[in-house]
Length: 542
Ligand code: FAD
Ligand code: SF4
Image (cartoon, rainbow, N blue to C red; front, top):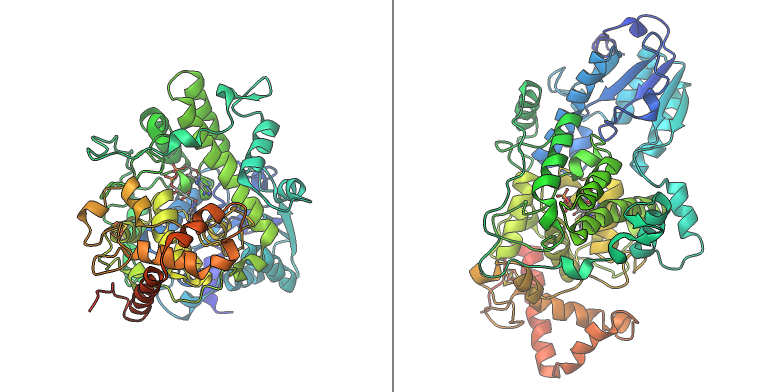
């Protein structure tokens, strides 16, 4: 082993580095939880923490700069906080040794390397949140002859075993039933065993759009100016990952637990009251609207979901936010977030290969540049690539919808989503993409595909007014590609859904189209598909 490696693995700040090491505690980039069970019996004299930045984690999918920077900045702050508690932290910083062969190193190789140097009695970790690492890291330890000991991830309300117990014997795993079950079990937003406010679900009140006058003055979310640690990361990412998408000049994400708490309080006070009403609305040039921007902080475990849910419920109890907003927010976190994690662990690793609709088109190149004439997609893509963020409906009903209608290979869609969002970690990204957005699991998660025409985007946003296409047209020069591909999607999957109990109503609209019109749509869809997938261009007739 080169001497340089040994030096790096032993840059300690306390006695655990020089005596025999009892526990080496692995903290991964999405395990930055100061209350983690791995610290419960930490002995600074005998134990040490291991953290590593490896370029492979940013290049195995072509990660955007904001995503890489959020992870690295949060990890470095967490390292510093642990050291301030007197813990020894063996930390591999990216770029420490300059560029070279080590830059391609995987997390597994880095761990193997340091196990040889540090020779702990045991490696202790919270179960990794990603299937790949949950499989590989214990193997690395076994190969090194070191005990691997795993602790439960108490960040979540429900363990994978809880979810599997709930799911047992059920043909369909519907969010709504899981959410009610967990809400009752955890006694959240409940009054005397009944849902607070009298209803489980306020979805109908949560579909507002802004109308022609727009959202008006929006309460800007609190921004966190990069400190010296973060600035160093931003410079590193800009230099090391120069070719990756995204901008860092406006980087203002929370990267510590204190900042995450501040971001939560700011959301509860200023945006939660209208979160419900406008959670599905889209407005050009307004990325945040009434959303919380808390997903990255929560996924990195800087913020506990319990804290977020409790704060929202307390705001309702004090009369500071309406029930439809609070229930909507609780549903996203206690419901969707827990549910997708449960589905992930239940379905991996086979989940990755799902492709129920036989989608086989490549992802259009403009997903990596935002260079398209489609105003809605251009805005969602540029915002995503620049900031590492777009809100749920943009992900589901703009970028996701287009890939679904075009018939893009689910695995390519998955790789894109995993790369570009600051909050992207596989356990939450993959079920949302493959199950919810692409229907690749054949309906295990949602009862029918989220398929819609450009008319939906017209209703929920102001994009169509400034677009060269017309959402009402499926053929001709001004035909909106969403609308063309929507009818074509219904047509291509007619057999599967025409008599489907939940989708039939939508599919029977096909019966109203004449043969000639359907043929024209098919022709136009063929042109769209060919040009999107080959020249990566938006088609024009003629
Ligand atoms: P808000 O709109 O303020 O919602 C509050 C919180 O609810 C979020 O912070 C998040 O923790 C949780 N939440 C909301 N919807 C979901 C959901 N469907 N699944 C799980 N949690 C949810 N979320 C991620 O955290 N990481 C991802 O990689 C990710 N990929 C997605 C891909 C697709 C195709 C879709 C449709 C959704 C994806 N989501 C993902 C869910 C959701 O879009 C984001 O959590 C949300 O947009 C983050 O912004 P926010 O914090 O402002 O959320
Ligand atoms: Fe998007 Fe179609 Fe509307 Fe243009 S017309 S903004 S492509 S939905």
